[in-house]
Amino acid sequence: MKYCVIGGRGVVLGFRLVGVEGIIVHNREEAKDAFFSVTGRGSRLAAGVPSEEERPKVLILTEDVVSMLEEEVRDWQMKADYPLIVEIPGLHGHLEGRKSLTDSIREAIGIRV
Image (cartoon, rainbow, N blue to C red; front, top):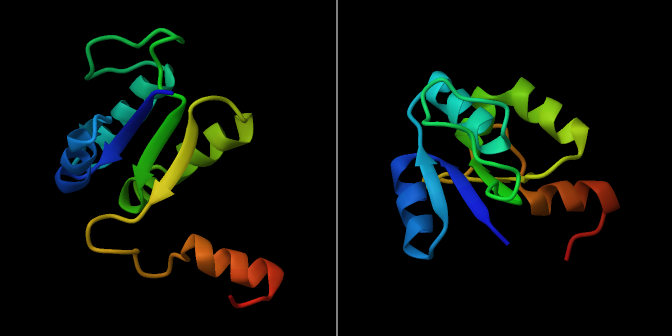
């Protein structure tokens, strides 16, 4: 299964060390372009769009990238199409106001393990 990560320099370089391709972004415009390129919607900055076979099945986005692309990510998730989007914290931990997966599960089932 093919993976791709979009995020800051440190996160992308860390994932590259274990063989996961990634795109380093610094602002909303770069993040949007990378997201559209990876999902096959098109790209102005990147050199072409990958074919469906070349596209990753799992797209890992850091929380700061998701914050920049909230509407685009929500629209993509509603389509229930590949790549599956997984949100992870950046190198400095969770962004203020974001819940961790564990917190969300605790809230949903009401049990603390």
